[in-house]
Length: 222
Image (cartoon, rainbow, N blue to C red; front, side, top):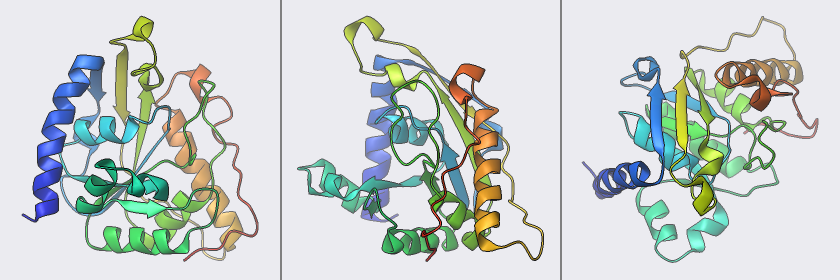
């Protein structure tokens, strides 16, 4: 076990206890999580606490992206570096981050990504970018959809203290694209399938417009 693994395990124990003090988490479908091997975990994004919520719910170590600014924060930045999280420049195509993510998946890790790219503010899923689909196509690993319900209320106000939060885990699947499909169409199809599987785990009022994609034609893969 590396020092990063030890720090992660220690912090995860603390976060699991803290989570039970601030909300009432319920996990559904834990049996769908692959016990080993590479997996790309995709989820809707309703709160800054989501990575910790998902990491604490799963039975295996999870890595995720974090905006580069976080790595400059005191203590938090150091923890991100020690535990091997991936810095990413939001709002642009970050080739370096995608290449690093591919290395993580090739080494058999569980990588968590949020296709929407940012926290939604209106209680509904946002249009996704193409980064998650790029990873799924290039890595060729199982994709594990997760739907988070209620996490938006975590640590928002005293009135919403201790909300019920559900982490719904769907079945892992391998994206399949017919031979001869263009790269742009393949990204579109994989993104739509990914978002549809997440949406299927959420209440209808949260998943409205989830399969509408926003793939810029200028985006390029690693």
